[in-house]
Image (cartoon, rainbow, N blue to C red; front, side, top):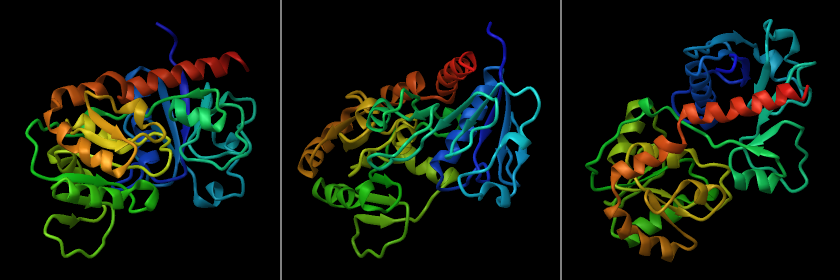
Length: 306
C-alpha cells in the first residue's frame, strides 16, 4: 500500500454549508474521502468550520480577503505533502507541491497557473487545463427512493444560465407539476410551486421523491452537482447537452436534448428508467471515494515534480 499523504485543503468559507454552496460541499466530501483512504487531512477555512475526519485551522477574514488571496505558507502545519486550494491563489505556498481546482467558468484568454485542475473533460478542454477530476459525493448524505411522487423538480440558482424558465415552460408543456427550489417567485399556477432555497433533510426529500430533475442548462456546466445528487437518490435527469452534462448523464439515468421541444418530447421516456440503475451510475463513478482516489493520483504526480 502506498504511503499516506498529509493533504491541506483550503477554502475561505465556513464549512460545511447548510444550503447553497456546491464547492463547499465538495471540499467536505473530498476531506472525508481522503480520510477514509487513510490520508491525513488538514483544512484551512473560516472560523467555526468543523470537518469530520480532518484537523481544521481557522483563518480570519482579514487573511483570506487579501488581494490575490492569502499567502498560506505561514499557516501550514509541519509535514505537509501537498496543498490543494479551491479558490484562486496568485501566490502558491513556498516550496510545497500545490494544486488548485477551478470551480467556475472563465472568460476567453484567462490565465490559469500550473497545477490548475478542471471538473470535467469538457471544462478542462475549454480552459486549456491538463487535468480534470469529476466531483463526487457521499451517498450516505442522500435518500434513495424507488417510488417516485407525482412532481418534477428544478433545483438551483434562479438565473438564466441555469435554464429555470425552460424547466417551468417544459414541465407545463409535458403536463407535469413542477417544484422549483432555489429562490422565491410569485405564482398563481396550481401546477407550479416555488419553495425557496432548501438544504438538509428537505433537500434530500425533494431529490428522492421527484419523478425527474430538470437541468436545462443554458451555459456550459463545469460539472453540474445537482445531477449526481438527484441520480444517487434514484431520480433521473432531463437536461441539455451543455458542458459536462453528457459526461454524467447516460441513457440509463436520464436524457439530454438541445431544444425545449426536444426536452418536452423526451420527458415521458424517463418514466421507464430503473431508479436502481440511475443510482448505480453514481456509485460506480461519482462518489467521494472515487474523487479522492483521482486527486491522490494528481497529488503524487505534483510531489514527484517538485
